[in-house]
View 1 (tube, rainbow, N blue to C red):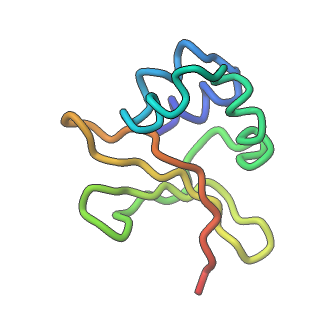
View 2 (spheres, helix red, strand yellow):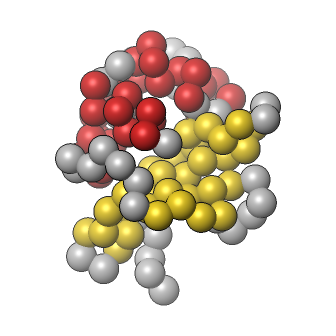
Length: 96
């Protein structure tokens, strides 16, 4: 998880590819991942570490809370794929 945050902060396009799910990789194969994660840097702020880790809505997903903005937690969603959890999405789910 820390790897994903570190790579986003570094804008390291080559390093993010092996950490992405196949769906993310295919959807962004023609795009520059540095541009893709520019907005993600704003979302994660200066956070470099996960504060909470837990199962998400399904056994194949895990959510890592990285910060709270107002009353909305910001999480990194990981999906279990090929025997490991890979980066799926940045999300700001409602606390409800």
